[in-house]
Length: 396
Ligand code: PMP
Image (tube, rainbow, N blue to C red; front, side, top):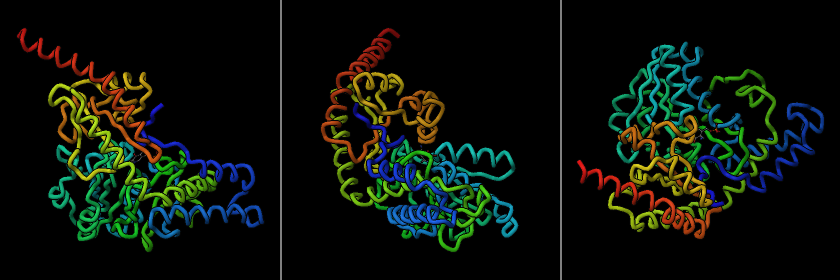
């Protein structure tokens, strides 16, 4: 199997498996217990916190472990409109998000809008780049939170975070970044980023699923979703110690080779896109989204004519190549991608985005085999579609 779906999830690193095994098998006491086994668990928690903070470039006490990026995103959005914050700044009720946020954000924003909170979406252009002029116009003194992803999960296009932080802060608003796809694939660090809150998830960087973090800038007091004393009363509930130590070990491993991994993924992605470029496909039928935008090093979103992503993915999976439709997170992938629609794609083309996302273990052989599979199994479909279109054009 050639796995090119690392933006959906990644294999758990052996270091993370070993750390989790230890936490499940030996150090299983409650980190809040004052007895020695509890204190041993607490020490593991502290080590993991330092490892994750090191990768993210934040302080350990800025890190709150959560069940994943979905929970972190919800904590950020709901916290911004928490009655305690609104009591201090009743005029700040507006949320500004990008139109291409993850469904976990957009669905919640829609719910908040239905509850009476104004929500604005910043548009993107055909390459998936954020419209900064519109952002500037939308971010006013009534905005509580601006929330934008570090990089888009479908296209890999990176967002202009520094500019957005400046715009938000100039109006007294806060910036939340869903950094889920960015961490482990870019050198971006929280401390230098200007954002106030970051969401991250372990399973996108070879850690386990069901664990993530919300980074809360030092000095910012943030309402918790779950009451309880854990995580300095910022996230109640007994800590998921196996998940947390797995996250820590995965972060430590990621930080160790981050620069080389990014360089290798960039070179292989280049090899892949060059392979796509040289396919003997009918002119103009292989379309790369965001090709000239600033993108993550590992992601390619491509459309093959008007072939549905479903058809392409089936053909590729039969040949042992695993990719995904850009919209894998929404309803099994059979819905048009809201990201492609926001980029101006037709509803038909918004069903045709195929995402290839590389990982640090991807090899040149994997890339060559994927191109070969596209050549053998997708190209004939594309040629048949073009021939059909030509026949139709002659008949009518
Ligand atoms: N945000 C983004 C940008 C994502 O790609 C994902 C995962 N698909 C999430 C949030 C949700 O993360 P989790 O699975 O940890 O809840």
